Length: 264
Ligand code: CO8
Image (cartoon, rainbow, N blue to C red; front, side, top):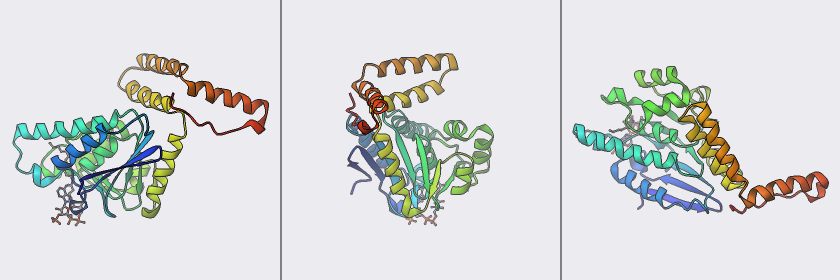
């Protein structure tokens, strides 16, 4: 059975980490399969992606502690790089990725969620970076992305204390955007993916690139990045049709229609 399932649903897709007997812990085999699944996404057909975990209990309970327990220094570095490379692929995937966190998101689980554009979770979700309690640092980007996501002080508190937090606290500190019941979570993720997929895909992709690339540089360079991507939209059919539709609507509300963006 696949360790990572991939299902295309209309204009969005769902990736499910499928190792429920180990609470979807990330071993090398899972990371390899996830990497191959991400490589295989047709970002011209798929306009948004949802990442979730199999089973009722866990999104991803971390990197595989059994596999890590015997690593040498160089093997540890290589394992960290393997995870970082896969998570970076997810972060830089041209289309938005929504993490639907359906339970434990600990260590590498919290880290993979932070590589996604948007996080929503179920009310049984639990987040944390327990690594220092295991004698290691967060090694799949946690020391970098947690501070960028929730601020330096809160990130340091979570990482140094290794204390897990529940969904309501994750919402309070801005680690997730919304909390749903377990039953409602996937529906909410799919609704959001559908809303994203209904918008002009080239513009959505340009927004992701502008936000991600802009955050890595100073504001003056960031605004130049935005200007370039904004300008590039004017070469698209979707810009012409999107704006023409607005102007038609203004003239005559009866002409209002939902634009079927062509990704062109
Ligand atoms: N790795 C391997 N197996 C795991 C993991 C894990 N992270 N988490 C759970 N499992 C397995 C358990 O061993 C158990 O297997 P088995 O049935 O064969 O004994 C099965 O999943 C079910 O788990 P539990 O029986 O423990 O379930 P509970 O409901 O009692 O507890 C918990 C759930 C609280 C989530 C508990 O399983 C737990 O604490 N898991 C570990 C969580 C953790 O510490 N995660 C962080 C790991 S470190 C990490 O992610 C570092 C990332 C960067 C690595 C960089 C490398 C260089």
